[in-house]
Length: 392
Ligand SMILES: Cc1ncc(COP(=O)(O)O)c(C=O)c1O
Image 1: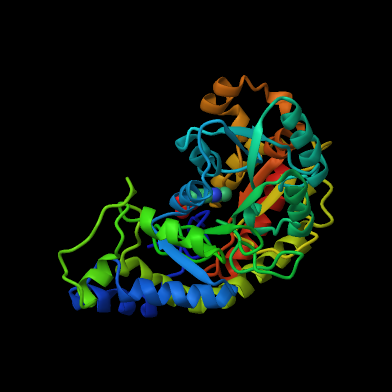
Image 2: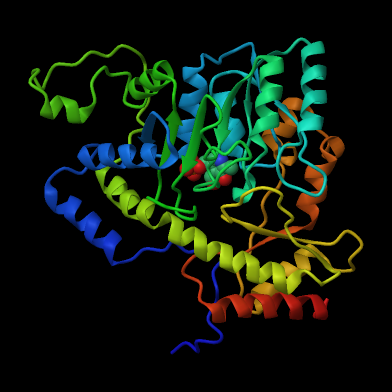
């Protein structure tokens, strides 16, 4: 038997209820498991939620980032700019297409790409002969980037914008739009730990019909008809044309059924995440050893990223270990990409090339924050952090 006061609090846990179970069971019993009317309904509901003309469901956000850049025509000889403070998915898709990456540092003390540094990076890249094509801003941990300024920079340099909103549903940017809807496309992740989940899954939104059409074709083998259309329209079921060498990135109806229920709960989930974030911030605000996340804009609180303060005697790695011993799971977001062997070696990066990303990385730890956490668990995390700091 586990003692309710001592059970391990995992870093992340999906919130799945009876409604999700029933929705998936219904699909399992329906005889139609792959992309079909559940996926279509999920797309329509998602597009309506964020006010986009078109939402396209996929089997991951990585697929969405890839197909967005592909639809923008990005390829060898082109350069895409993003932050090194992100998961590799944001950057690897640029390399899928044979294009090159330029990283631009995050704001000092923050986590998102810094507009002032970005301008300098873009000027330098232009001077160095880069053919700049697109910017991928990442709303790290769910903190909305200032899209107004990023759009103005993108305009100055003639860049398309693909928003990586993998962490940022459902919140709004400073331009009043839902994150993911300020650029040419926006991409959301429904991976198991995200703010809403389909197990694995993603969604691209866009108001651009041409981009939407290209993604629709490329997500399913470059075929000109969807599977559902083949089985429901008057045209012969067996007839289709392959018009491109496409990919296999479609979402299943099983995943979509799960996603539809999660979408309905998204605002309730967010409200609970906000409560937990507020409790953490209140508890740690006065602790000189810690830096609480300071956000100027809206926040989806996918991650609560705490930092040990710069002059603190506390070692971040020891604090993580101490929390683990006290029954609290944590994580680190992120090990900057320029430290990863692939990017480091390809672009000959040194650790000091992105000082703000390095500073954030060396001091950060992410605490558990999910709707299923009860108040006692939130208190246990707070006490574990306080005691961990004392013990250091
Ligand atoms: C910032 C960011 N972008 C993209 C992705 C890719 O998401 P997915 O796992 O749905 O492909 C992730 C995944 O964790 C992420 O953290």
